[in-house]
Image 1 (spheres, protein in one colour):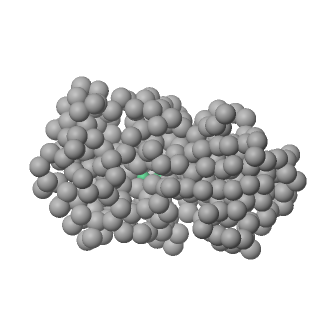
Image 2 (tube, protein in one colour):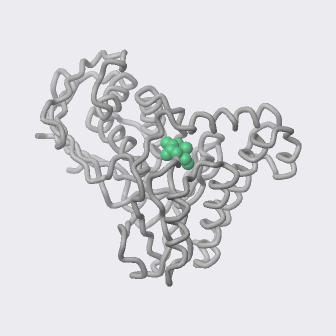
Length: 329
Ligand code: GLA
């Protein structure tokens, strides 16, 4: 095997459902990876740990409909977008839980693109992999996941402006531990995710880009549902900016309050939480040493993320920010 790449998962600390309207997000990579070990070949032939049959794809694949299982669709999406001049043959393995909202699919896409010899910057890599994700899943996602996986910085969260695609690493204070708890499996395929994207587009037809709208602008939207969705986005962008400032100044109480407010907004205005996720957050924020907690990711299940004092919570994964995806020499 001559090629070895690894791509981390990610957890979003704050800035949820803001990326596809060009807003602010603040995710971090986590110390769990998808790895590909392979050699150059004429096709793309990958075997996963959990599946004895290799997926074999032609380099000229266009139609993803017949590709099975789902993980192979993400591989095919990258091949179709990238049109590589050579293929690979090898294995793919991961310790990122699937269906947890920790970007296992983005990690796979980025790993495949690098194994196929992608050369370009993190933004170009993320844009290619985002297109692959959309064609593989049908979910009209934003760029946060792929860009975080591609551009992660050890010890830092990334303040990403999804409008101009600038990235500012924000150091995670030493006194802060990030804990992830996997609550319930979820899929965004067929979920109300696409409805939320459409509702934001409706709001933008009325008041222009949400990334530059104020709560006052939002109040002019006549439809109560569209108004609520837009208010979430506008306030979440503000919370994300404030959260980055709180991390920089080490004000962990303020950071905790902002993530709790983010959860309430996702629950009440954006309506993408569930009673099980709400109960998990409530339980978490009552624990001593917890600054705040919220559901994280696309919604309807998945994980909660908690900001805690070191060692406060033993039930979950303490995650650490690592460097973004790369070829391992
Ligand atoms: C999913 C999508 C992202 C983003 C989040 C919600 O993870 O892939 O683009 O929209 O949901 O913040």
